[in-house]
Every structure is written in C-alpha cells, then in structure tokens.
Length: 195
Ligand code: HEC
Ligand code: HEC
Ligand code: HEC
Ligand code: HEC
Image 1 (cartoon, rainbow, N blue to C red):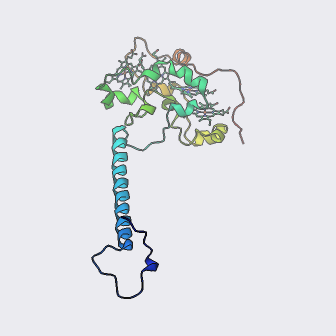
Image 2 (cartoon, rainbow, N blue to C red; image 1 turned 30 degrees about the vertical axis):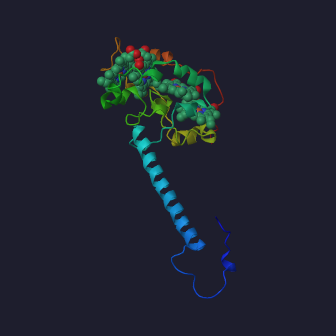
Image 3 (spheres, helix red, strand yellow; image 1 turned 90 degrees about the vertical axis):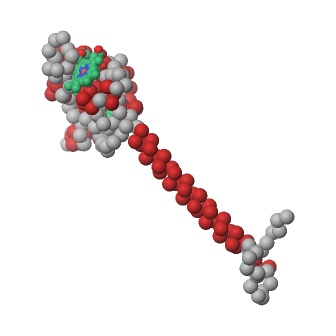
C-alpha cells in the first residue's frame, strides 16, 4: 500500500537505514530515468529525421521553394503551368531514368533534389530560385527582386535545356515556343515600385 510521505515529518535523528529507498532517492532515480528516456527519444528522432531527409533525395542545400509556394499568390499562372509539358517533365521518365543525373539536368528543377515538391520543370527553373524573392514586399519591388535572384526569362533560359540534342523534330523557335507556354497576359499592369 502506498503511504503519502512527507520528508519534513521524519523525525530528526540518526540517518534513516540505508538500503530502504527513501522517496527522494526514488524521485532522483525516476527523474534520471525520465531524462535518459527523453534523451533516447530525442536521439531516435534525430536519426529518423536525417533518415527521411536522405530518403527525400535531397543531398544539397539550395534556395528553391517549389511551385506550391508560388501558387499561393499566382493561382492562374500555376493552373496554366500545371497543364503544360513542363509540369510533367519528371513523370515521363521511367523510375530508372528518374535517378539518372543525365536526364535530371533537363527533366526537373533541381537535378539533385527529386523530392515531390520540386519535380518537373517548375517556375523556378525559368524564374530563378525563390527563397529570397517569393515574399510580397520583394515581389512588388522590381529592383529588389532581381537583386534577390529573380531572373527575367528569355530565349537563353530555354536554350539551357532545348538544345540541339533534345528530341524535337524542328529547331527551337523562341517566339513560337514562348507562345506555347504562355501563362501571363501582355496587358500593361502596374509594375513594382521603382526608386
Ligand atoms: C539537354 C536537356 C535534356 C536532357 C539531358 C534530356 N532531355 Fe529529354 N527532353 C528535353 C526536351 C527539351 C524535350 C522536349 C523536346 C520537344 O518536344 O521539343 C525532351 C523530351 C523528352 C521525352 C519526350 C516527352 C514527351 O512528352 O513525349 C522523353 C521521353 C525524354 N525527353 C526522355 C529523356 C531521358 C530518358 C533522358 C536521359 C537519358 C533525357 N530525356 C535527357 C531535354 C532533355
Ligand atoms: C519554361 C519556363 C517557365 C516556367 C516553367 C514558368 N515561367 Fe513564368 N514566364 C516565363 C516566360 C518566358 C515569361 C515571359 C517573359 C517575358 O517575355 O516577359 C514568363 C512570365 C511570367 C509572369 C509574368 C511576367 C510579366 O512580365 O508580366 C509571371 C507572373 C510568371 N511567369 C509566373 C510563373 C509561375 C508562378 C510559374 C510556375 C507556376 C511560372 N511562371 C513558370 C517562363 C516560365
Ligand atoms: C530545365 C529545363 C527546361 C527549360 C529551362 C525549358 N524547358 Fe521547355 N521543356 C523541357 C522538357 C524536359 C520538356 C519535355 C517535357 C515532356 O514532354 O515531358 C519541355 C517541353 C517544352 C514544350 C512542349 C514541347 C514542345 O516543344 O512544343 C514547350 C513549348 C517548351 N518546353 C517551351 C519552353 C520555353 C519557351 C522555354 C524558355 C522560356 C523552356 N521551354 C525552358 C525542359 C526545359
Ligand atoms: C506573397 C505572394 C507572392 C509569392 C509567394 C510569389 N509571388 Fe510572384 N509576384 C507577387 C506580386 C504581388 C507580384 C506583382 C509585382 C508587380 O506587379 O510588380 C509578383 C510578380 C511576379 C512576376 C512578374 C514580374 C514582372 O516582371 O512583372 C513573376 C515572374 C513572379 N512573380 C514569379 C513568382 C515565382 C516564380 C514565385 C515562386 C517562386 C512567386 N512569384 C511567388 C506575389 C508573390
């Protein structure tokens, strides 16, 4: 039976007999047990985290945030992009090709990060890595966003992947292919504030 035990009620005098477990020793033993249990749990979690990290395919640090992030503010552009060949560029590869660095350089956004949020030729493959510019106040400032790695895509952007070796029946014509990926309108709209 458990007896509530208040140490202050133990009469002063000779030390209590040693082998019996005083409540303070139990408390100490318990608290160190809890401490080690938490520590072990933490270590296990860390191991798990680094494991899933490795499984995600991500081996380098980079500044790409993924198309879902752009979608938060660019729903129409995202919808149009989703129906384009670029959005499917990773899916058309076989499982083996999806691990082949020779294919990934053109068939996805970041060759060495094939985690789900980044697969396919996404916004950032053409507009630049978004970590620093995908913020409302940066996006509204034309000067700042280009300083923070936003790229104005043009013919050269396409040429990185649409090379002579890519499987195409006709040579790449920028004006034509630019129309084919149109996800914007040319109507004049207010640009970012300029100094
Ligand atoms: C230099 C860039 C580049 C590399 C490297 C590359 N591709 Fe492509 N691939 C392209 C481009 C660009 C197209 C689209 C060509 C077009 O239709 O105008 C394409 C198209 C394809 C298509 C046709 C997709 C469809 O919808 O019909 C397949 C399949 C394909 N590539 C597989 C591969 C495989 C497998 C590898 C690796 C062995 C690879 N590619 C490497 C750029 C590349
Ligand atoms: C294959 C390359 C490519 C991809 C992928 C791409 N874009 Fe674009 N984007 C362009 C090009 C090229 C233009 C037109 C640039 C020009 O000529 O002014 C453009 C224009 C735009 C514009 C309008 C710019 C302006 O001057 O009005 C926005 C906004 C935009 N893209 C957002 C996105 C978003 C969001 C995604 C992903 C959901 C995306 N883009 C994916 C190449 C791309
Ligand atoms: C990171 C590599 C990459 C970049 C950059 C890129 N593309 Fe592509 N593009 C591809 C791949 C890969 C395909 C084939 C996807 C598929 O069919 O599965 C493709 C397919 C296309 C297609 C459909 C097939 C065709 O030829 O009609 C168009 C249009 C296109 N790209 C236009 C552009 C334009 C315009 C730019 C530049 C503004 C551009 N791409 C930049 C990789 C790229
Ligand atoms: C927090 C909201 C927000 C997010 C997230 C965001 N944008 Fe924007 N973006 C804007 C706003 C607002 C503008 C309009 C700026 C203007 O009119 O000058 C803009 C403008 C643009 C333009 C047109 C620039 C030009 O030349 O007119 C492009 C391209 C673009 N964004 C691409 C992207 C891409 C790619 C991502 C994801 C990596 C992204 N944005 C994420 C809010 C956002």
